[in-house]
Length: 635
Image (cartoon, rainbow, N blue to C red; front, top):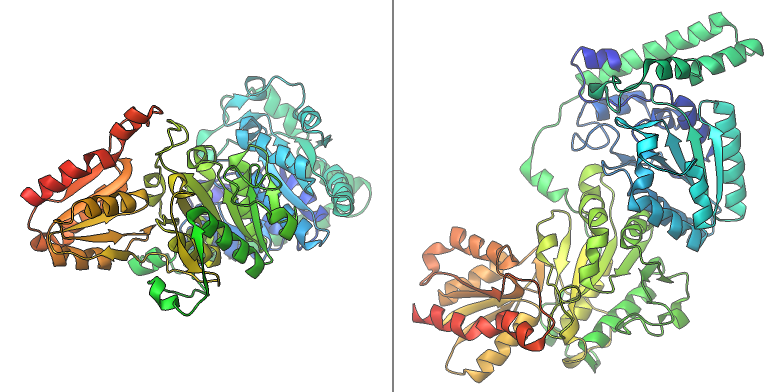
């Protein structure tokens, strides 16, 4: 590969020279059906798992026949066939995925272990702490391997941490830790084989620090000029392949001629695979395919768009909060592989009591209190999905999602596009203002997620929609950000069907019809608009509740715009870069000839949300609604 790199025939390359014993020994220690989550330099895992070299070469060359069809680089791929889940560039997140995979194994009672790698540099990441702590609290059968290779790119270990040995951190998590010679394949194999056998029977995490050295640059372009020559010479004597060759020669297991023959055979195999891959079809761009592949196919969905379609079903009066709880309960009954996770959601029933009584019906295996570690929980949810489970996460408040942002944006959202794997995760987001909760419990942050391809975003305004959209989200194998407005929890109710039903994600609902203007909104904005129209019966308006923001119902918007010719877009989020800007731009670009007036946006102030009620009322878009509508109608 280094020769091909110098020839300019491949791009960026991460070399595993000097660390081969860890990858090969660790992979050999695991059962073939157990998951391994490697890093940049774990090339030996791919070959030990017998992935065809042609397939690997195609991946590294960005070919269509690679694991990611040219959509992602080098080692950032996964494969269910070989039970290997690749990393992303952010280094730490895959540790939590291992937690989720291991949790699924616990729930399946299949006595399997999971192996995940990290470098010494990534042990400074919060993801490292969160993943180890979660595994410890839940007794998850995960082997966390630290490849301590001396440098994080150019930063030596003495500038990365102050503890004497990284393995000593295991004490802080209350788990076992072992430090081994990572250049001795037999020590790696026997140690990990023993640990894996043990934790299959007595599930728990173990931290293993493998002492080794990176003989090449972090990637080839960075070089090793920052490494003292004496250090390179010292570790060259400990080269794991040379040391093992010496061992098997001394033990008369093989002779030098046999070793040379093996090397020759391997070289020929690699050369042939590389040349074969070079001849493979290059990736061709098809816009429809690219867009379609951002999302996993929905296999089962039942739709209804109007509550009237369910008149024959038995109904009960339910508050917004009760409808969400009802949907969760029915989802848990329908899908035995559905797990709910979040802070205080078990015996306590959640901050808003939505999951009260769930532990008694479904048990603590499926209704799981979590430590305060949003990133690890989102990562674990993806791991559960990879290993056959569905997950619902409750963010205690939507504001706290920032602590899990990387996992959502870079792992959940991109997984299916990158290597065709679903991310069957719903994240419940108690959101919004109106309760005087201030800047950290009241934000409307839906626009953070509507920007990100691969995510779906729903935002119900009524109990019937809350239940139907939640059940649709549970069925959907894609990552769903499900916003639920806290102010609506106990302030609105309506009769809704007791039976299970779903509402199609991406379909708006026309609440009222009129001729003077269209009010396009969602969430609490729907109720502001209804109240305003009730108080101003002289205004004839279409009132369109989007219900879903990604995807959003462009056809319904188009129909309303053509009907009235005037548009007001209302939302609780701040004005600048709020989702209303996207709707406005789309209308202006596609339906301009149908407009009789400029589009008006009515949104909240471009400030943080104040806690004082007077200040909060002034902040919210509701206080500007009258002026905005008068401006629109007067044009």
